[in-house]
Length: 254
View: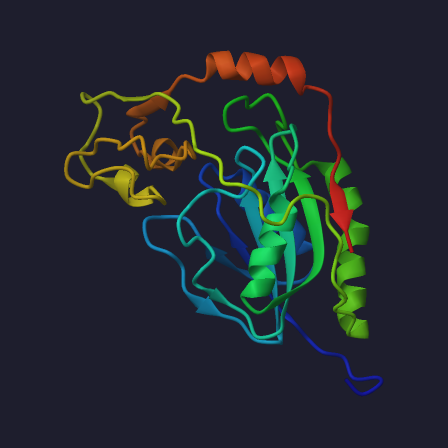
């Protein structure tokens, strides 16, 4: 880029956010980078989009058992062309483990250049008192210099590989489905829950779950318009709360 010439980037926030926490984190990060448009990676069908060198993709995924969600083909429809990318891992105050390294590798394989990464705390899906209200103002104060650093790197044309912790090729972990239930008296039979399921673990006709496909993301529960779906994670919540209540802080990498 010639000296003095400023390149303008279109910020696009892409997120997989079954219960809303990762979406909010995406919006928080994007707001610090510029006016953004958004791409929802959830639902029954996989999003398809190509990105160019003038785009800045902010990709945010929740951490499930230390890895990105085990949704078949979740990122396959995203195609980069030397596109700068910021990877965000959201988690419920336990740890993000291998997620940043795993997603960074997958995005670079798809034509993106990682210019920054962040681990951001959001409410835990099974223990909502962990990470409640986050990201909060304290988190934003840590994300502000990170966003400025990303923009400075882009201005300088600095696309050097970002070093993040974790194993970029972790061994897959089998999901352990959380027991869910349905109140058929209040269920409308609208199949909104099944259409929201990213792994097609729920039959569109019978509305029954196939546990072998379920990743316990609770998209179905969050999508139900009448609250007919529920789950019991009280024992897991007690264990998580007992071990991971101490506040963790945002971590950023440039």
